[in-house]
Amino acid sequence: MSDFIAILFSNTMPFIRYAFLAGLLASAAFGIVGSLVVVKRISYIAGAISHAALGGIGGALYLQYHFGWAWVTPIGGAIVSALLAGGIISFVNLRFKQREDTIIGIIWAVGMATGLLFLAKTPGYVDPMSYLFGNILIIGKADLVLIVLLDLVVLVVTVLFYNHFVAVSFDEPFAKVRGLKTGFYQGLLIILTAVTVVLMTTLVGIVMVIALLTIPAAVAGLMTRQLKFMMPVAALTCMVFTSGGLALSYAWDVPSGAVIILLASASYLSLLAGKQVIGRLRQGRRT
Image (cartoon, rainbow, N blue to C red; front, side, top):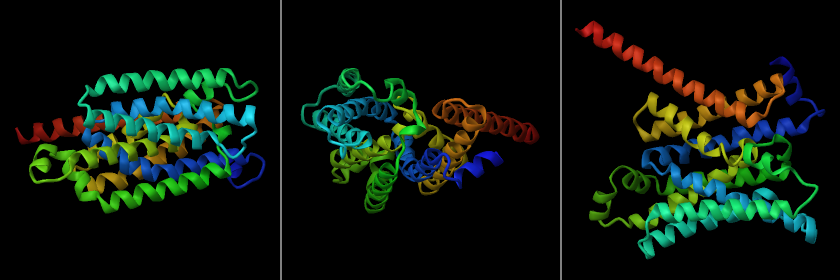
């Protein structure tokens, strides 16, 4: 652990420091939006958006290689494709009343297929597995700036529409009866989810980003039932998972994304089991 801390403050491996900072910064959005996703039970939508982001990543790398567009970054391409996927899900579901699971399945498959085709035609870049399962080497200063900006967007939108998100998440039929534009706020929540998914794609990968969106929020849900407390607790929990996972992956020389997710999962299961044991002990004392 001491070696990892020393590396963070040295210039020998700056990519580790960038990954560490990215994890801390993105945890704010993950805690806020992840709590809404868990409460609203739309983690399947987040999964489709995360896989659709691969299309944008592949497209960005393709443009860099074949057209020399260095300003088109992978995370920027992921944002565009994720927002497009979220917008399509919201629009088709509200306007055409199609089955949501069908739309999600199509976007999931098309995004993955498009991304893999672009990556296959872009030799010399990071292996597709790095984007699927995470690679700290692709975090840069530009990505950190973009994560900060996206964090601000998530925070501002959540603060402005917090009460509306609560109404849509906990009792959508009642909110609709009260005249709230539930379709609009449902779509806005999906767009926020799309933005947040992109924040951690390059750190833990597309396949596992859904776990980091939901597990910290699930852990926070075991500690508190109030959404306003659940959000900051989830953010702090996510920070612990990302920083701890990076430290362990550095010490063990293993992929960071896998370690982060395993650490988060083990923590959730341990807390859940501990809560069950405490509950049974209390029940036994009462009887």
